Image (cartoon, rainbow, N blue to C red; front, side, top):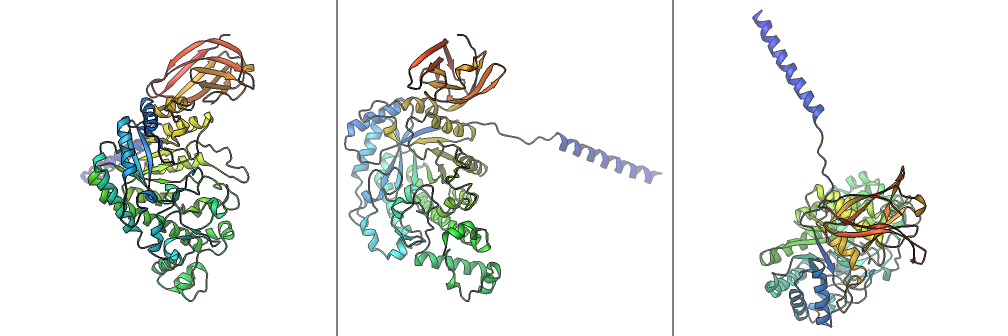
Length: 548
C-alpha cells in the first residue's frame, strides 16, 4: 500500500508538471517587434563628384544643409587625386581645405576612402582614374579584372593582386596621420570595396558594352582568378576523382578547371549544378576575403585615431531578380550569391552596412525585360542585417528629381525596417550653387531629415468624384485626379471614406486643404477649410470630416 502511494504521488507530480508545461506552450506567444526607426537616426547628403572651386559658395550650401537638420556631408576622397604623383607621395591639401569648410559650416564630415575610379558608372560626371603609377607594380593579369568576353577592367584593383593590401594600408595610414586633427568633425569613415565604392565585381559597365537591364559579365577570367578557383577546388575536394564524382566530370587535373565558358547557358541552367554552386560560392568568397582584408587594415589605422564607426556599401542590384530564364543573374554576376554569408563578414569585421535603391518599388517585378524587385530586395537585406545585429543605413540609387513617390518609398523603408540613417544622392538636388534651397528640399527635409513616421489619414463623407489620390504638397493637402504634388497616397474607399497612410517627418506641422487641379496643374476647385496637423512622436492618425 505504501509503495502504491509513492507511485501515485510520482505519477501525480509528473502529470501536473506535464499539464503545466502544456499550458505554458499554449500561452506562449512569439514576440514581434513593432515597426520603428532607430532613435539616433541621422540624415546625410552626398557631396558633388566635381571638385569644389568656389569655397564660399560651398560653405553656404553646407550651412543650408545644417539649417535644414542634415547631420553630415559624405565625400569621396579620391585615391587618384591624393597619391597621383607617385607611390607614397601624398598631397592632402585639397581635402584639408574641404574639411576646414565643413567644420566652419557646423556640419559633420563622412569621408569615403575612394579606392575606385570615378567615371564609367551611372551618374559619373567626372573622370578620376586610379593613380597611373599603380599599373607599373605588376601585370594586367594580376592587377586587373578580365570578363567572360575578354574585356579588361581598371575601375578598381583586382582582389587577386597580392600587393593590394599594402597599397590600401599606406593610403589609410596617411589619411589617419593627416586628418587626426579633424576628428571633431569626422562622424564616420567609409571604405570603398569595389566599383562605384560598392563591395562587388565590376560586372555591369557601359564602357564594356553593358546596358540596363542586362545581367552583366562575370569577372574572373584573368590567370590569377582562374588559378585561385582551381586552388580553392583543390583545397575543397583534395583529389580530382572526388571533384569528378561531385561534378559529374572526367577531368584529369585541377588545372583543367575553369570559370563558365558560356555565361548565358550557365545562368539559365548551370548555376543549379554542383559545379555552379561551387563556382558561385567561391566567386562571392573573393569579395568576402577582400572585405576582411581591407577592414582589418582600416580598423588598425583608424580606430585609435578617430574612434568612429567604419562602414561599407552593398549595391542594390534589383533587376532580373524574378527572371523566368535566369533569376538573380545580375546579382550573381556582381558576386552576390548568398547575402547571409556576405553579411556575416560585415558582422565579423565590425562594419556598418549601407544599402541602396530605397527610393524604388516593385512595379516592374514581373515586367519583361526588367523583372526588377528593389523593394523586396531592400526588405530582405534589412531583415538579414537586423537579425545579425548589424547597423545599417540607406541610400537612393539614382538622383531623385520631381519624383514625389520616391520620398515616400524611402520613408516607408526607413520606418518599417529599422534603419539608422539615410544618405541622399546628391547635394545639387536640394541646394543650388548659391546656397539657396531647391524645391526638392521640402520633401527631403520634411520626411527624410526628420524621422519619418506613419500617419493614417481618413477622409469621411468624401465625394468619390473628386478622385482617389491624396497629396501633401508643402503646405497643401490635395485631393485630385492628377498626380501632382508631393506624397501620393494609395487610398482605400470604404463606406464613404478614403483611407491612406503617408510617412511624414516626426514633429512637423502640416497645413492642408482639398484642391482639385487640371492636367496642367492649375487649381480649378478648392473645398474644405485649411487644416493643421502636427505629426506626433511615433506617428498617428488624422480624420477629416469632408465639407465643401
